[in-house]
Length: 126
Image 1 (spheres, rainbow, N blue to C red):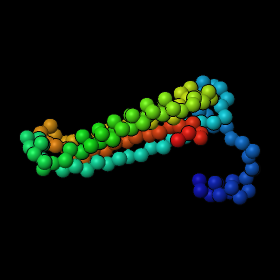
Image 2: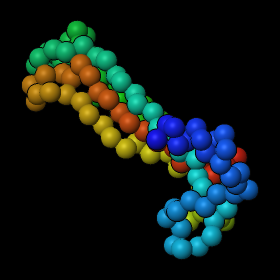
Image 3: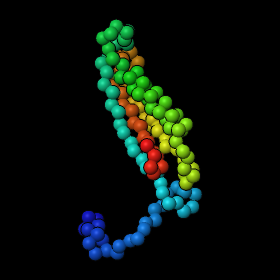
Image 4: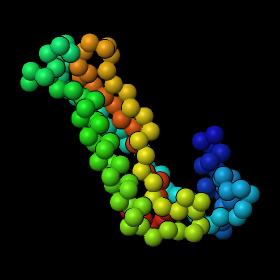
């Protein structure tokens, strides 16, 4: 495969454009939303849940929840302040919390929490 790509780059035809299949309801589109994904890893301090409020632990899920809440506020601010782009079915920049994983037992303050977030945006936004 690498050989083929090298040969195409060196000797192959030069294109003036590109057609890419995308979910567009069989319509011609001239752009697509950009995509960015990031992973946030929260580190807390594990302890038995009976001692959770004794200032000797740190709940990673609770701190992750604060970050998620702030992201939700930012997403709402974007919908209020961003001009809509007619070329997209959802024309605003979109921030999404896509996955949250944390904790290992019911009786333990979680020491870790991983959050996966993404942003989709029309060209020129954010």
